[in-house]
Length: 114
Length: 115
Image 1: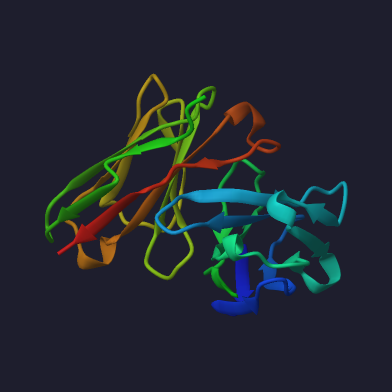
Image 2 (image 1 turned 180 degrees about the horizontal axis):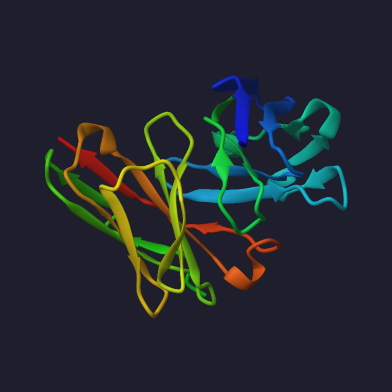
């Protein structure tokens, strides 16, 4: 069965600092991995998705994530945080494809301090 | 190009009542999935509809049922509401022909409060 663990329900960084949001997954087959962002009172927006073409994936708004099979991790990073990055971030896994059933982590709320 | 639209955006019900939530998929999409997002949690998969049939189902009781119409729009019905059904219900659409390589697009959700 698939599962996702996001370490840290809340992360606080200063504006301009590195953002690191952690995600570990469990999957019995090569996974399809995603990061979504949710702003208050809004739906989910896809930040990036892992494809087998590259282990380092670049997404929107300067975010990127690195797939590490040996560590079963897919951590999300951004070199310099901006106030507009404050939101909740979800890591998700699918064993069936990008457009198919997703299993989500519990989410990490990112706070950016000025 | 309209994205995924859901209605209503907010609603309040009392325990034991029934609720119907509606979703119109993104233009060109034929597959609709529903997710429940309880407060402080990640979304959980309820079920997926394609060609007017339920194709996959998550770990939800039979009180949760759905329907897909010929125009690909979908409804989620919840009977005998419990306090624990209070959540944001998200609809997501995709194209079945690209179910592996495509992408899920989410609506903004319907927030249900059960009193």
